[in-house]
Length: 104
Image (tube, rainbow, N blue to C red; front, top):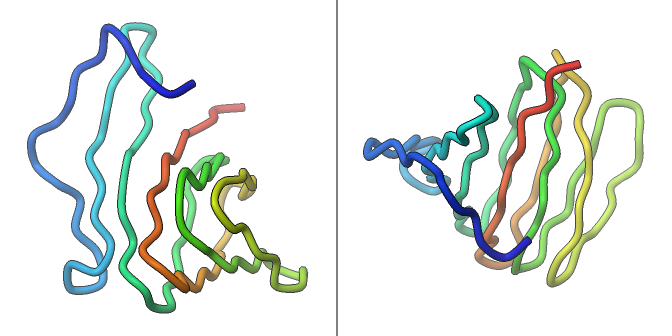
C-alpha cells in the first residue's frame, strides 16, 4: 500500500536519539495506529509494547531480533518484532519506514 486514506495525523513528532530518528503517528478510522518515520545513519535499540510490523520503504537497514543473527534489508522489506522485546537496528543509509502496531 503506497497511500493511506481517511486518517488522522498527530502534529507532534516522535523524536528519538537526539533527532536521528523521527516519526509521525497516523490513526485510522478503525482505531489502528501506524507511525511513518525516518532514521539517519546510526545504530539504535528499540523496545516494543505490542507486536510490530516494521516495513522498510527505502534505504539499507540491518536488524537483529533477540536470539537471531543480523539480517539486511536493502530498498524495501518487512520484519516483525514480538511484543515486549528489544531489537537492534543499524541504519546504513537514511531509512524511510512504516511501523504498524498489531494487537493480538
